[in-house]
Image (cartoon, rainbow, N blue to C red; front, side, top):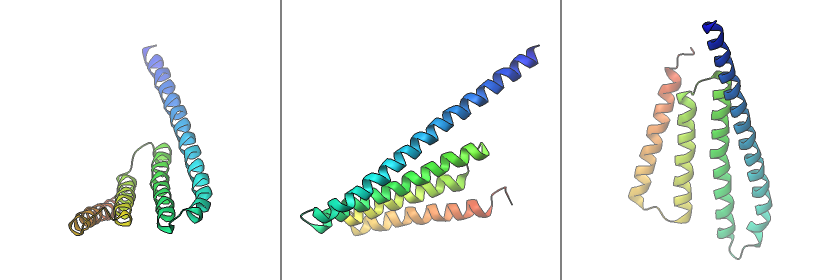
Length: 140
């Protein structure tokens, strides 16, 4: 009796988690589609800006943000598919985020030469960790 109740509760928990993840993935996909649509609409604004640099800066910012969002959606989908978070995917999200921040800082002229060295070192560490995680993953 108690084992049957426990199995029913666990089944309900799994179904609830699946429902929540489905809703989260749908929300992320909807946000991603809206982001892509707005980015495509802003291509026209990039042309109409008084300075090409201002228009392109907004466009680059949006595209790089979409790349980070795409990686996050992929991480959610992989979790839903394999029921675990893989280190490789998290490191790829980190690489995309660090690369986005570094490129935005460079494009905006806000990063000094020593900061480029630190950002690049962090990026190199993330790429090395991702390579090691892929090489020593338990799936092989």
